[in-house]
Amino acid sequence: MMPGFFHTGCRVVRRFLALVLLIVIAVGAVAAWWLQAPLPVRADVPAGQPLELEIEPGTTPRSVARAVVRSGMATDADVLFLWFRLSGKDREIKAGNYEIPQGTSPYALLQKLVRGEEALRAVTLVEGWTFRQVRQALARAEQLKPDSQGLSDADIMERLGRAGVPAEGRFFPDTYTYAKGSSDIAVLRRALHAMDRRLDAAWAQRAPDTPLQSADQALILASIVEKETGRAEDRAQIAGVFSNRLRVGMLLQTDPTVIYGLGEKFDGNLRRRDLTADTPYNTYTRVGLPPTPIAMPGKAALLAAVQPAPTKALYFVARGDGSSHFSSTLQDHNRAVNRYQRGQK
Image (cartoon, rainbow, N blue to C red; front, side, top):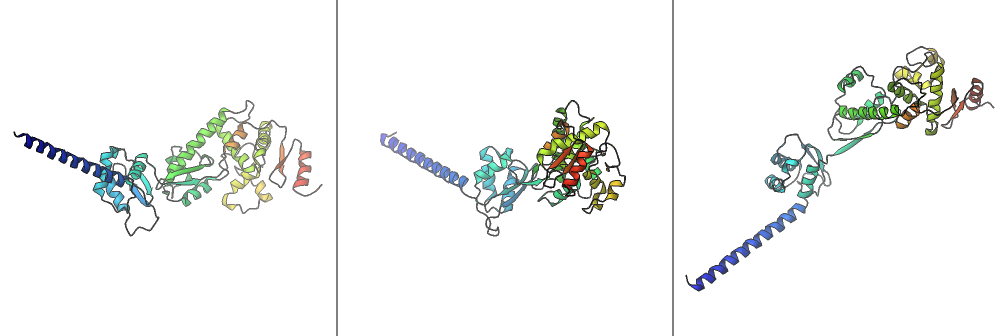
């Protein structure tokens, strides 16, 4: 072989390799730019509106890429799928309901899908609410599937694995986030388990001399304390009054239980005839606790029920400013009633 030919061949190879290298660098630069650049959206998508993407369990990565395009992204599904594959995370994409903001890059999109950052909504269950109010809140909640609609309270508890357990008071008041399209039964299950944990924790801290015989009784008393308390600092005192009454066998005589027993018949005015009409929830006619809670108690009410303030008080009356006056004798209580309820000095 001629030396000149050898050198010429080497130059050709070097030039070819350099060209290949330049092409690789250019392709890499374009790929890096594409991964970080905002994905375009179709012209029919309103400006600023997030794209809704639903990925069912078992969806293949290729089908995910197609679903992204169907959601409104103006990109090539095959290119998007190729990115999923080359990333090595294509099998880590999680099922769920997503909201994809406009301007999202391919890199950010994949990160979102791999982390399972679903579109979340929230519903708040308020301390002191009845289960009827809970159901109304769930029915109004945005993008929450109404699987409990048409079911009775008893049917719901059976669906939750608590057949025969009254629904009232069994759900912990809190704010619950959920993925768009979730079942309201799933939210209730979380609230039920949250109350289980809170109640068990409170019962484990009960005072040694509590008159309560079970955690269920603590839940009932806590619901009454929740409804009777105008100011947080009075909770333990009010629980102490009711605990004292339970010890000596006195009637609890608490209006919220009577009101609960009236249900939808209550028009805002509690009349004397309501206090004398015997029902399972009338604590003016029946000794002891009512048969079920009357509302959802919060953590503070649960703790007050099992750790009441050490007091000799057997009575309390609202002062009119949200606080209560406590008395240990009927005579003192009557004077307090005359002063705070009747305006007498």
